[in-house]
Length: 260
Ligand SMILES: C/C(=C\CNc1ncnc2c1ncn2[C@@H]1O[C@H](COP(=O)(O)O)[C@@H](O)[C@H]1O)CO
Image (cartoon, rainbow, N blue to C red; front, side):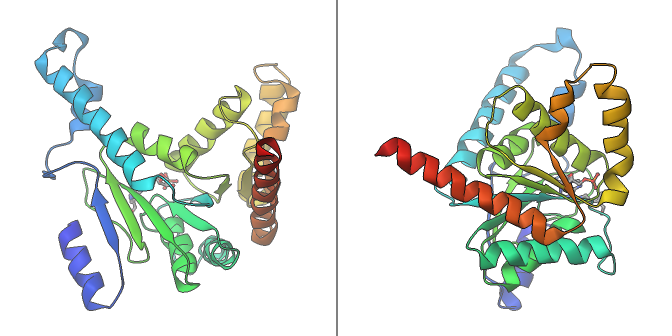
């Protein structure tokens, strides 16, 4: 469904949605990021130069739209989670709790877990941000996003999740979720970002991965054993929210102390 039609539907249903495209004159068939990634190296022509400018403009408009957003938490998880799933209910609860605490929920703006978190946030009267991504198959922003931005490039969009949130809550998910999780872990591990909580929700789902990181990856020393402390693991969505909110308070205190 295109964004114009989605906006009209939302308007008819009385939902207030603010959607921005981070690129002008979207042409749905044009998968420019795919061309960028697939084009041969010798093909560095004028079109690559223009592509760099388009990437730059996507960063500029993303920063412009999100500047001054306020305290926010990014919530990740599978695009395929069904509303009957316990993970959907947990993501809804996370969005709701964040809104009640005055924090903004940011998701990828898609279906499944993203929709659940946006719905929880929006129904609790909070700001519910969706950073959508242009895909070869149309999915569009979910109906519970009340502040939406669309991106063409995954890597630009991933920068926005990190830059404009103060922590990640990660529910069960597939490749997309793992990508977002491991990017944040790498940034914290290499101290590109500091004091940034990452909470995994779902011990049964994540247990295998955490076991492998502990028994193989840390044991083989491809990560340091202390890197295992860079994330939290819980079954309790309230605990996940408490961890990120506590960290936000600590962060705020640190900033005001350094100003005085
Ligand atoms: C595949 C399906 C829908 C795709 N729609 C998406 N919309 C927005 N964001 C998405 C979408 N798919 C993946 N993402 C990003 O990755 C994470 C989820 O990926 P996973 O592989 O499903 O775990 C999510 O946090 C998004 O940022 C099905 O209808």
